[in-house]
Amino acid sequence: MTEVLKAYGRALRSLLTRGILWHLLWPTLTAVVFWIAMAWLSWDTVGAGIERLFVEVSWLNWILQRWEASALAAAIFVKVVLGLLLIPLVYGTAMFIVAVFALPLMLERVAAKDYPELEQRHGGTLAGSVGNALLAVFVFLVGWIVTLPLWLIPGMGILLPVLLAGYLNYRGYSYDSLSAHADAKELDDVLTRERGGLYLAGIVAGLLAFIPLVNLFAPAYAGLAFIHYCLEALRRSRRTG
Image (cartoon, rainbow, N blue to C red; front, side, top):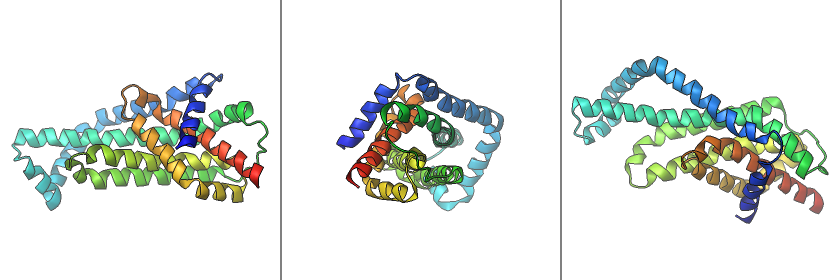
């Protein structure tokens, strides 16, 4: 936990580095604008599809009946579900944009300032970066949808999204944070050895996503923290190895 907190502290300090603040803003803003536009264009169509789904699928219909739903209550319930689906789409898209586009640019500046002695061995690839980010988003979205019924259990509506966001951040940022500086073996070794700490760092970012206004910066700030965590772990590994 100490290394995780240090990474987030260093990420906070790195916000003062020239060019970093912009990357903190644009990925989430882009994702929000994109999905709001998509929702505005297709809200009624998607809503009607979800209503049919709740009628035709037995276990979804059971959930709806637990509301003792009138037509109005059913319509409200569908809108709530749509809203709950919009949240992971925005967050997952922001994470993807950060991982593939913003993080490499932040990495270049942070590494030059705080880790200049680390040799770049380029063990990662662009295909690996994109594929890894897409897989992370896919698992996150599927997990979000599949676990929605469990949100009816008290406390699960907070715990499950945080755990899912933790996985998304861990899976989405770890590879990219190391791909430029670690060779292929170092990449595998650090990711294996630091798996617990990296997932914990992802959970911290997931918690930040629940704080109003802070959640606008959380995806990119998490990426910045992962850069520090991973490069520091790589530096320790080379010193001891």
